[in-house]
Image 1 (cartoon, rainbow, N blue to C red):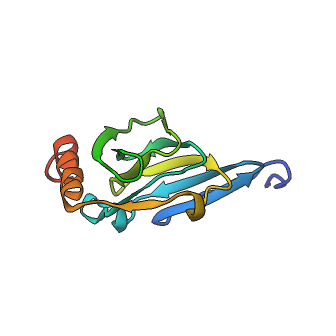
Image 2: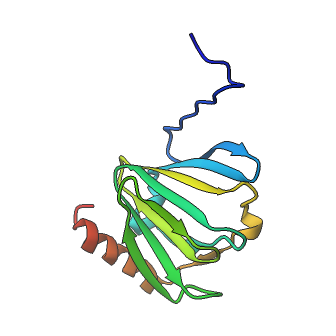
Length: 144
């Protein structure tokens, strides 16, 4: 027997990448799964959200959250290894990107009106890309 969807929505996403699953009022819940573009060697830019914070929760696997200092461009990159069940709130207008292990699943909560129009990207320099690969290797080991 299934429950009427007017009482309960059940959603899942198991494909690669990002997918919004629930929008309600001012907020959105999405899932981010591993995809090839999220391998450290494939990261070429960071994004920020000019109008909102963004919350990440690691559900499975491993995730490194990379944060960029700087206002108009990324001036320094730092990394935080996410732990399952902890809530990571990336503050408004902070540059960020992430790399995931192949078995990773991350829950994302953000404002529903978060779009490319209010969430610019900035390309990383070659030095910053090398720093991301170095941080990944240091935190996860050479065979990440």
